[in-house]
Image (cartoon, rainbow, N blue to C red; front, side, top):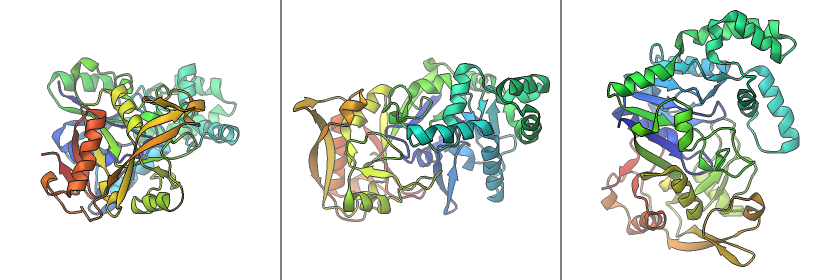
Length: 407
C-alpha cells in the first residue's frame, strides 16, 4: 500500500508545502490532486522563500517525479511563470513534471467572470478563475489540457464558448505548446507506478474547511481538498491508501469572507499575524487569525480519517504566557459539541475556551520532543487527547530543519 496523503485540516495556509517538502524524500512520485493557482505553498529552498502555486512541493528534490492531476484546474500562464522561476533557481522540471491530459484549463474569460461575480457575492475569491473553470467542467463546457493534441476539436470547443474564439485559439495554442511535452495520461503513469511498488505522495491544496461539500459553504473553494478529492483527482483507487496525514497550525487562520468561530481582534490578532507572517502566498492578503479550534479540528480529522497530525508554526506561540484553545460552542444557551453545518448557526455561536499555560520561551533550534518545555508538551498532549489522534511532528520555524518528530 504505497500511497500516502497530506492534506489541510483548517481553512488552508497550514504550511502543508513544508511538510510535503520534508516527506517527499521518502517517496518516488508527488501528486497535486485538486485546486488551482489560487493556492500557494511556500518552501524555503537554499534559505530563499519560494512560493509554489501549481507545481507539487516535491519538485525541489531532483530525483522525484511530480504530477499535476486531473482534479487540478491549470492556468497555463501561471504554470509557465512557475517553471521559469524554478529554472532560474537551477531546478529543471524537464521529464520530471507531468500534467494530466484530463486536467481542465483556466482561460481568460474564467478570470473575468470570477471578478465580475465576486463584486456581488463577496465570497473573497482570489479572482484567478478557479470557480468558473470548475463550473464549466461540471457543465461540460470545459477545455482540457489534452485538447491541444486535437486542434480542430479545440477550435470547435472554443467556438462554442466565446465569440472571438479564433484569437483565443491562436493565443492558447502558443502557450499550450510550451507545456505540451508535459501533458500525459497521468492515470496510466500512476497506476503503473503503484503496481510496480513505487511510493506515491498525494498533496492537497487549501484545507478541509474550504471543501465545497464539507467546508463553510458558500465561503469555500470549488473543489474537494478532503480525502475524496484524492481519488477523483488522480484516478487511483482508495484500496491502495496507506496513511493520511493532516496538517494544522498551532492556532487558526483563514483568508477571505466567511465564519471563523475563534477569530481574534485587536492586539492578539496582530501579534499572531506578524509573528506568523500571516499574509497570503498568492495574493499577499492579510489572514484573519484566531486561537486553535479543537471542535473544528476534530471534525476535519473525522471527515478525512486522519492517522496523524503535523502541527506547524508552534514557534509563533513562543512568547505567550497564556494560550487559549476552543473546546466547544454554545448556541442559544445550548452546548454544541460538533461543528455546525449551517452558516446561520456558525455566525451566532459562542466559543467555549480552555486556557493553558504558555511556554514563554524560544523553542527554535530544539531537535527532540523530550527537550521541549513542559508547557509545550502539555499543549500538544491536550490537542492529542481532545481529537484522539497522535501528533506525529511539529514545526518550530520556517526552514527545512526546523522540525521535531514525535519520539
